[in-house]
Length: 239
Image 1 (cartoon, rainbow, N blue to C red):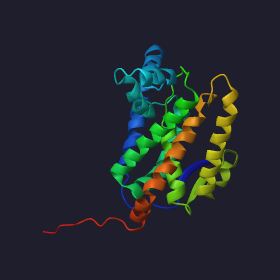
Image 2 (cartoon, rainbow, N blue to C red):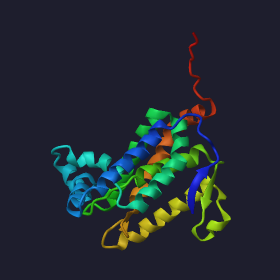
Image 3 (cartoon, rainbow, N blue to C red):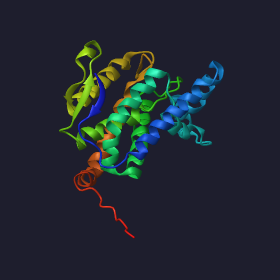
């Protein structure tokens, strides 16, 4: 199921969410300008390599490895990777930003990404394949959305039923199924040679980001819900 829109409309313009989408697209356009050799070098230098990050944690030196936790969020491995992530962020991110506020939403997004990396690296400490993508941070957005908008509905397209148009689906159901699939695939991948990674997908990063989002909402959710119900009044000046 492919989400294309949701029922609740944000009251504020999602500056941060749009900026995150633009930044990801801009980085991907830059990737397209690189030849295969330089692209591989770019991904390895800016993506997350679990083994390198573990080594850095044991013997800290320089900022390249910890910086990759953030730079990797804006790198994508192909058109489908980029479009899928940006579509989910477009549909769900604006409402979460509306609930948290612009600056808090940015911090929330980055913290969700850190939580995603933490669990994936913990599960797969010896991996040498770079991990890239905004999926972990977006998973945190999905977790927050499910808690903040439990009654929301999402319009989804079903690939083999395009001609019927979009179907309304409860957001909690869609997000719940998505998380269950990530968890199931993550558990199934534990016996694989590349632990926690199956077919190039870091499922445990998705699980980690989602759980981080839930923890953050549990911590500050009361503020977010209050802000969602009672929007901040802006002072206006007249001549």
